[in-house]
Image 1: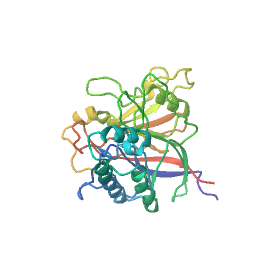
Image 2 (image 1 turned 90 degrees about the horizontal axis):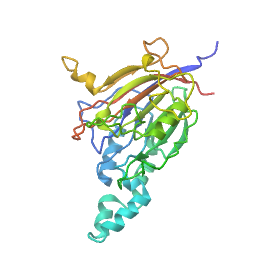
Image 3 (image 1 turned 60 degrees about the vertical axis):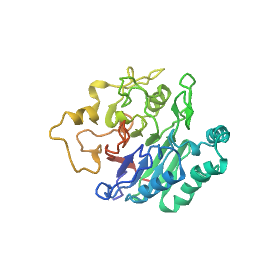
Image 4 (image 1 turned 120 degrees about the vertical axis):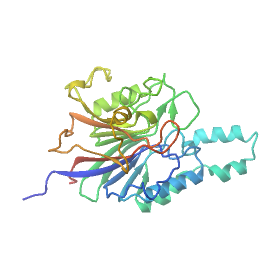
Length: 311
């Protein structure tokens, strides 16, 4: 009798930590298979903040930790950092800047050295892993978000960005797709249209992100049978068969408010109330830990799904 074709796999997903570290009483100590950090590792892209984030990741109980950059992590985007350093050098001694922010490539070197602890800083593209639990994991990663600002890893909203996402288990992006967990406080949707189209075509088991702090939450989306020529959240999601797991508005309506949690857990395996069927459903997770005032009060997500066993 052979081993089961699928393996239950547990993820701890977080984003937008901005250099914070967990207090001892709030550190999620649960054993998981994979930790995912969806970017904004820092607030100001300083070396000390990167070191704090690596310490935070080292304190989480997982053999594999996958990390991407966010727009605040501009020193990891060398062309942007060169431009910023050139502009700032007219007013500040470059040696003082480099002392705080590092030389070109110095922040990335910190993560290269952290690989021995199972921490992988992922470039944009597709990456493959065989997990300790025997599962095969394929992820697509992208730190890019649409903006007219001068932060890192950004593209102009009126210019397309190619999220070249094939058949993957998990999509890890810094920003949200247009139409899913991307509402700002002003009510505007701030997600990427190009990203939504890529996810609608690829239909991963999980798409996790952050960036829009007030969009924290999770939603299990059921896709319509056929993909539109120009996919959108209006035309390609079967809203009647989709289920909100949680968001900030639904949390606020619950009385009494939950206290003492270290994560918000949800499971979407066979036999669960809302299983995530590959190709039919995608669990979207906005895992931003800081609120809009940058208070670290929002919870990371503990997510169970099934992955195919590695051959």
